[in-house]
Image (cartoon, rainbow, N blue to C red; front, side):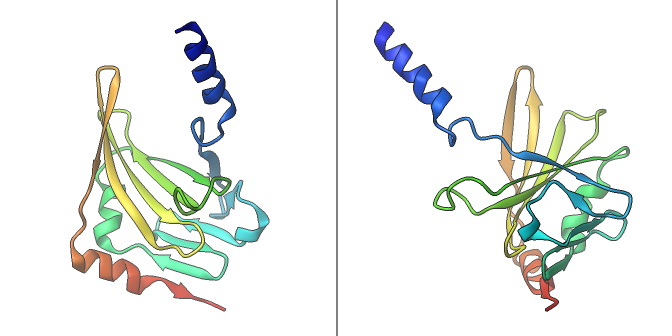
Length: 154
């Protein structure tokens, strides 16, 4: 049993996918997203208009997505990304986590970093010492608005 625990601990500490952590990003006063590799430049997010640009793709978030930003009185946006895991597991992604310290939940919008396609939207609720993740099923109209809103600029 002791050998098993040592081996299991070793695997946890050496397997990058098991201990994977998103890279935190920042948005400067001009809307530039700071912290992504150069291959994703230009990278911008206009918080007021909810417009995201990564390289040559732009999406104006439709109302069915912006409602998650507007749900909170004092919304706090945390932006993170992952581009260093195997694409077999999940596409490289950008994560918009919207929260408010006065609530026990947050919303996350996961977007494909290379195509800007929507991966999923989910709600995370804090329950005592655990978290419950609930995937939000968006209706077809919302999904179509989002998909049709992705534009290639060059």
